[in-house]
Image (cartoon, rainbow, N blue to C red):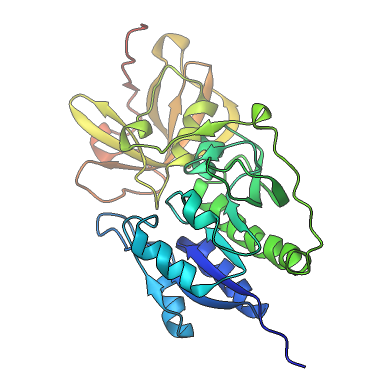
Length: 320
């Protein structure tokens, strides 16, 4: 006797969306419809395409600007799906959509909920110097990232990991989590655990201006900002003598500054390496710097225009 396959409508984007959809298909879940995003021509397209995978698998795809419009709701309703899954999809699903699947709607979020609810959680976790993050599969409800938890998978954030490196770990963690969690979910053997949102945190989207380096901060804080927005993200920056300087990489070893305290913060070259001595008495190696409109310079040295062995004082904003 043939059993009717489990069906799921999938809202997905980015690398996590590709890997998660691949897991569903590998487990024999029938996906009659994929909802994804139209790629933004102004965004760096460094990630894989959910639409391309769906096309290879012969799955109908829609790319609405608003997933909660009536035509999309009707298309999802017509699928009569058992589940809705959201994998790094960027829009909130409204209550009409969430009420449609027979067996519930679930979201995969890039943090250890309830911590770092909201937008770009991995970037925020790196920016705050966390030592770990992870991915969480949870029930979707009207509020963002607030529904009961099914399972989580942690990943380490090492001191010199960039947000991109951590994101790649999260992609693998997402696959492991789904392969472990989906079989008992399909079998009706999982009981979600309510989240205590008072123990967590919520963050909004990051803007380009959030990449500005404040040289009043410690070397560790500055390093965390640089690696949180390092390529493929837009990068950190500061303004010096009317010129925009982008800092696209750094390395932190908890080393003491080598210049006199009265010169902090400052940038200087030592051998073939470029360093910034910061106001907490620690120094930070700057790996990639570029002037506005130019490509990256050497991965080891300061800007040629700054001069070898020169001590470049960095002005800090007045204390408010």
